[in-house]
Length: 632
View 1 (spheres, rainbow, N blue to C red):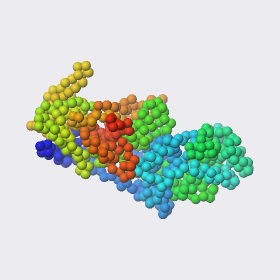
View 2 (view 1 turned 45 degrees about the vertical axis):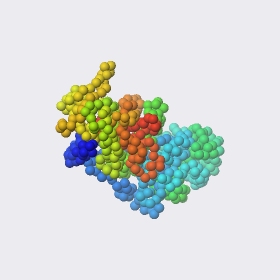
View 3 (view 1 turned 90 degrees about the horizontal axis):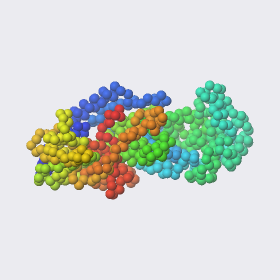
View 4 (view 1 turned 60 degrees about the horizontal axis):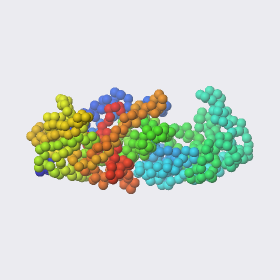
């Protein structure tokens, strides 16, 4: 009986913006109209945030997404900047590297670097090395090494090898001695203040000059360097400098430091107390690239000036020379990604931890439920240029929304439930409804839902007093229930005398009425109770660091809403059993609870949180169903 009843609605599709069930043609017209309106609005306002320090700001454009097809995942390697990079050095064996410093958790900007370095090598049939730049024991922790490697794997990339700059400490030291012997390095005892004056002073108004230590003979510098190694100098009293070109217009050639004595003599995570001196990034990076045979050293444009010193050092030591090229880094407005600032938020307990879903560290993005494929699709959409990109959070969310729309199943979830008793349900009680997991992808299958006399709707879908512009449930008014055989008409309701809140609604199936103007979501009795956490932006302004008093004065007090009595329908167990959603090769082996993803119809996209237990399921909102107007 239920099958015959629901047959009439099977050809209709849900308009997620209004909650109405409409024909396919009508839905297409509405989507096209909204897309045209969005494009017009986009042309009338700037989408990117201004940044006077940026090399360029990439303007964001709204596009019609009604029938959009996804970009070729290899498009950024086939054309544009990365294609030109390969043409410069069209080697048979491409070798790239991703060289993170293990002093914190990776953020969304690192996802672009990972996708570029691993993807470039993969596209050209090469290999990528994950190399930890572990030359600063003062800031490095074991947990960061583990977290970084896990995130790379989670994004779908397997390193050809995992290496460490510390593997090469002795080799780097030997090359430093060679540089001294070549007359191209010296031990300096200048203070920071003295070095600043040598480099032209504040604003660069003074003539630049090299300090007197540069004139000491090779044997003296060599002995002093060995004394540094042997612990005969206190921190910051001596360091090795490269003898470059102090008169160059490039600050990266002004006798950079090559080795230094750390302020704190903490044991190194891997080498312990073996070394008292450590090489700098400027000395280490290019040489480790050389040792590992890197063909294309791809980094962000903040290192564009470093290319000259990179090439100078390799040439000076007559070692193999990789090719460094720079692309624009990815920045997100409306949030912070500074490790120091993030640590402050964690210490002050303003967030749940480094993986709080409101942050943009990759472990937080993962916990929130955003799939790795969605992140890679977003990076591919942006493309790769030499321009620095400043992207609004809404642009990122829109990209993820498009990815999820066709890749995750749909369920019914009610955040703030209120019971509705259907008084004339009669023989329809207990009828089994077949609910598709995705109306757009029949291959996802379906699940069974039992119709009960008492159902639960969201409190926001009922009004005590009706109005002409309101299309949901009100006394004497009918509204459709998604996938149910008939609309319901409210006949009465009860309230709590103390609080004034509605405690129960009485209704009947409106079997003879007109087609309802709107449809609302619902769940049957005995649905699973869950805790739903709805997160919005942690900060109120586009640039929290520019707010008077600092970013802590920009915290949004309403960035998290918790619904402890939310109800999800029985399809949740099927979605959980079949996770991860979407099915991505390689993710299933390391999939966590966040891989249990679904669209709660008319509500938002949700994923299971790591706080979940067998007795208590906790859900995080991944993304709203449509852009929050407040984010524009």
